[in-house]
Length: 93
Image 1 (cartoon, rainbow, N blue to C red):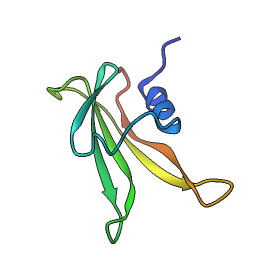
Image 2: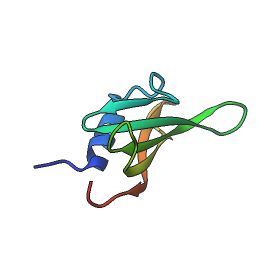
Image 3: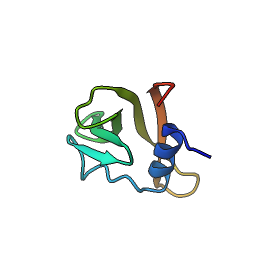
Image 4: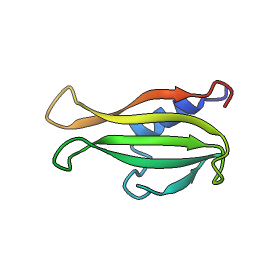
């Protein structure tokens, strides 16, 4: 069964397999996609999450989707867990 782009990205975020800080402001090759990762700043330079743009290749001819990684308080303790919110996903990617 083929996973959708959203499922692949969600799995990578939840299992902490996507290194945001390494590719921040730059692009990176991920599976058959090209990702652009930007930091979302709230106030006083506090990181509020990340915005991820997914393209077909380095040329960025076709935009497949935009996702936001947001931090939600964990059930126990004071740690925050990253969650994926979908802003836009192209249907046929």
